[in-house]
Image 1 (cartoon, one colour):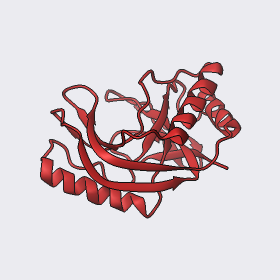
Image 2: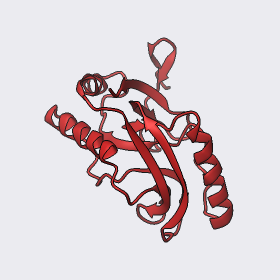
Image 3: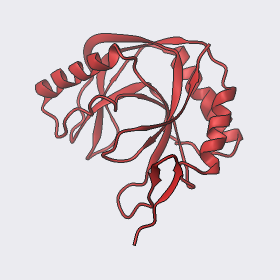
Image 4: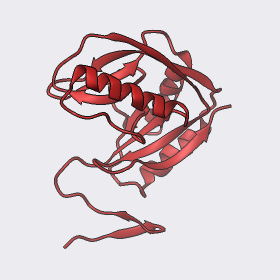
Length: 194
């Protein structure tokens, strides 16, 4: 028997059996003009490099700002605290530029991502501000060193960095996202940048 708890106007929360638990993270999403460009570049690089997995696909491309531990699920206190913290973040709008392809992560699942070796102070500052505010509130965050990137596919091997056509967009808001394997992302909140 599996219990289904409906607390969000028809959205189901099912306790998970096996598999990876849901993940929660603050992120930047590319704007409507840039996301298809990312996907087109992902397909081109996939055809050229022949990795083990297909491109992530539309609706999955993002820059993770900071992952958070949410032991009480999407309707619990942790998400509410994270939302409250996000409302207090005061940052101005900034540009993102991606002009490199590079591998991140460990075997056997390397994330091949779009990134840049240039300094992105707006993105870095937002990530640092979120991380500090979340930790001060007692919310556990991921311990990974932050490097802005958009994962486009996964592969078994590490690939050397390559130059790619530059992609730019102006970031005007950031998001809190729930990610469950093989499902569309659920946006749990969004906050504007001044």
